[in-house]
Amino acid sequence: MAYPYGEPLTNIGSDPWDLTEMKGRDSVDLLARMVYAEARGESLEGKRGCAHVAKNRKAKNLSEFGGNTYEGVLLKKYQFEGMTTEAARKPDLSSQAWKDSLNIAMNMSTTPNPIGNCLWFVTNSYYATRVSYNNGVEYFTFPGSTARKVVEKKVIGNHTFFRVEGY
Image 1 (spheres, helix red, strand yellow):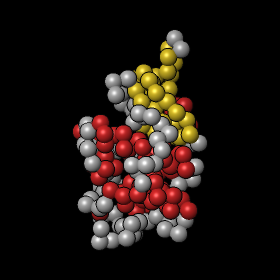
Image 2: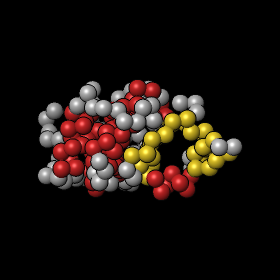
Image 3: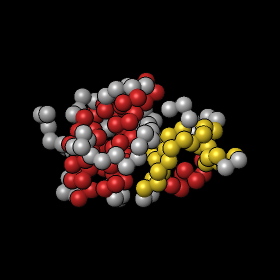
Image 4: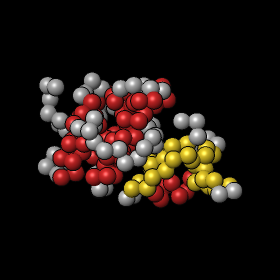
């Protein structure tokens, strides 16, 4: 690594989802930025959950998730909205939230997994607007898609982590 983790980046693309400035960066840097941007106000367990969604997606090695690298997964368009924010591009390096995020990213092989095989997370309030029930079975509807049966779910702080049938 020839640059400091968390160094300020400027969006050089034409839209927020153009993450060109992040391509080629170390996986620790990218993962820490995502965790910080998505979960800086959450507990350590919540931060670990967000990191493990990325790890679980990487392990799945599906093109819809970005393949089998952290870069591919974390920079996949429309997947981790936090990566498009000022928080990801310019994290507060002196904050405890950044230090926690960086520590989690640096120690993924030993970081406890609080979410099992979950592959998605959203805020609890958003989850509540997308969930439905049929005969006691929970279904999540992704935007522009049909309802999918939820087969695994864990709520940690302000996030709902989940996996749907077929994954």
